Length: 280
Image 1 (cartoon, rainbow, N blue to C red):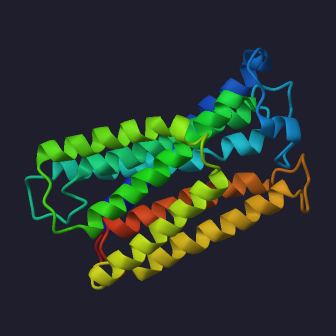
Image 2 (tube, helix red, strand yellow):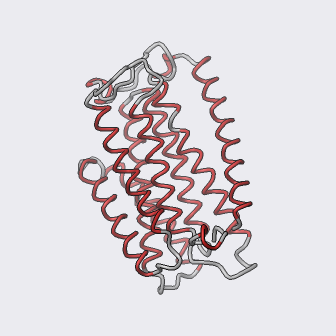
């Protein structure tokens, strides 16, 4: 994939995201907050977990924390486009390992978008079911990234077309099962364990393919998630908190985790493009 094509995909993703932003603004302007009536409130809403003001008179109870989820939408659309380009080129030229498995990239993009809508649902409604969907989307992105890491580390294992379909189906079922699994283990344990596991996989794969992997992407992905965690913690602790400000720490958490996750995906998907002048 050339840089020119990649930039073209970025522009398309930005256009789709701008369109979705307009749709969401319309929803917030014309739909009633009463839509959420009758749904059980989340513990987060009861304890006022986040800094942003809970405007119960608007469809989006937390405006910035809802709109900021479009960060996931942007990267989701971008990854799906990358998967489509890989699919179109399957029989045209020699491909790297991720290019040979466009379904895995497509699933990655789908879970980014799922997380976008799941987290937006939660922050718009502050309901219990919204929180569950939000967390399932978070685990969906994390588990798919870990799956990509496993696929790349065990690069000597050839997967048939049927095996790839089974892989994707099993991933989807496993992530659905996380609706129940997530109730058994605290996210304060599960998510750090997943982040640590992904970091270890990045390190292993970098030493496997030093000439092809970008260490900068691996480091950037890790640094961004650490910064995001710190900002989220400060937001929960209400440090320098202004509930009515356009700046909200949790909204920044959404952007940073989206960018961090994309960096981790790009680490496995692309070869060093700054040196080669290509995204391959």
